[in-house]
Image 1 (cartoon, one colour):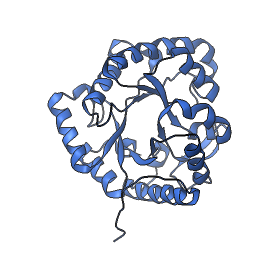
Image 2: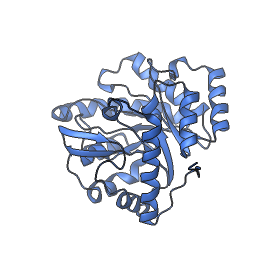
Image 3: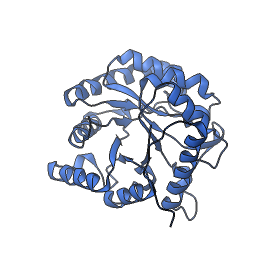
Length: 282
């Protein structure tokens, strides 16, 4: 496994500054975050800009682990679907060793699952067919409070679409705040996972809080040991929740550093490999 950091923590920063933070902290990869309100937006990224981004990544020694471009697929008109198609095209142009996955959520609500799941299957199937043209992958991010909130529901959707170009962004925090144990959900979901998000958490939905890795009591050594045993070899990507970002005095450099230390210490404790960059403490 390799250690990465999501630009979700600094999505308002210019991408050059995002990359400098991720590189200097010791991570090997960055998950880019696209949105109309952010400096990086797939809809404004022409060929020249993609070449510039590729050069910046090479100079920083970073891989793109994924592109997060969240679109409500239950309200998916042509413009919204075009945004995800554009993200898949950009991912192909930024590819280092195959296009990184494009991550989006399904939205909806837990109570609406029975009705909403078929519409989601149809939209993800359409996106998977576009991904097949670029060699890419669209990845579902499950989310507490949405229709795709439980491991069993996620597996249903993945099996319903039944495409090698539709896979999973495994953000386990959403299952943790619903009281699920990793020995329950990881064996079901790791075979589908092409990317991960990782943070800490406290409490139970809806009275939960997402935290910086190491602030809660989540057992990262156990998580890494289990992921390794299940054969996951991709990126373990730290994501900093908006809940953390809203704190007074929020410092992205501090949370990136603390998360790095938490994960690398957990890998040592677990006795499993977790590739990262050596960073001087001076």
